[in-house]
Length: 303
Ligand SMILES: Cc1cc2nc3c(=O)[nH]c(=O)nc-3n(C[C@H](O)[C@H](O)[C@H](O)COP(=O)(O)OP(=O)(O)OC[C@H]3O[C@@H](n4cnc5c(N)ncnc54)[C@H](O)[C@@H]3O)c2cc1C
Image 1 (cartoon, rainbow, N blue to C red):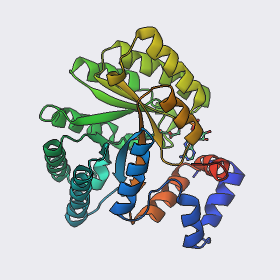
Image 2: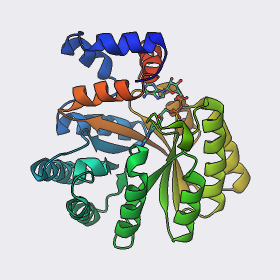
Image 3: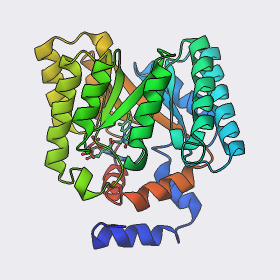
Image 4: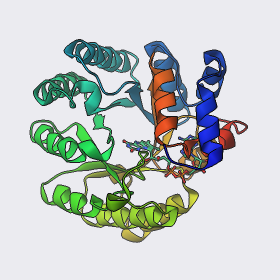
């Protein structure tokens, strides 16, 4: 783990903090432990004029049984979204579907989820994980995309390779891409570390995607500078509303989210839920202690 001494001290001491207290901190970012909690949160967001993406917390499955359980949860999520007529898709991590130990099982699981989603007219986003699986994730996305049109991928602006990846994706046909900075702490040789460089890369990639004809671009950021740049770019290029949406995390930057919705921009909120919230939160913290700054900063702000 890298980071400054404050980060290390906070993350190190988290293991001694009782779960109910960690839960209090995590609550604003996670809809709850059950699917019904996620549905309730999505219904509230829909009433505010936002669409949503449900993410079943979990990653790095190590057995086919875990993969089956995850697929079943996604099935129930998609059925519940349909029954409640919610404006909502799902986000899936390929490592949760077994990518790290059985690529074929992973693809089979994704095909199952995509078929169920297709039946209900729903969209499935493949989240992007750390750089050890970037190539596999994009390859699997391309394979799935050739059979399903309700699937999208993610590009991270912190990676040097992303411009080439976008180029390749754009030349391979219709693309639905979420653009984000990237949450994982990556090796220096392959990634930008400086916040300014990650921002500039984000701006370049957004222009590349919008001018290059991506079918739909999810602009996933809470960074006010990037949002202003995106609004100006959308205006300058004349991008229609059905070709882009802003995307934000649950519990983050509520006022900015509401302002964008009031300005008429499409907005989608990422809604994680699940039993694995504790492991997930702790792992994220250990991997990237800079998140601590956000958590501390947001504790006292309204959702
Ligand atoms: C919808 C969505 C989907 C994402 N999907 C992926 C993905 O598939 N793969 C991936 O690697 N990353 C993903 N991310 C995470 C993303 O890469 C960034 O790490 C995260 O969004 C923070 O970057 P930022 O652009 O908001 O800018 P920052 O400068 O990091 O944040 C801007 C402001 O937003 C607030 N903020 C940002 N993040 C958080 C947080 N976690 N908790 C509390 N407050 C916060 C802070 O107030 C901060 O000052 C996703 C992000 C979003 C919004």
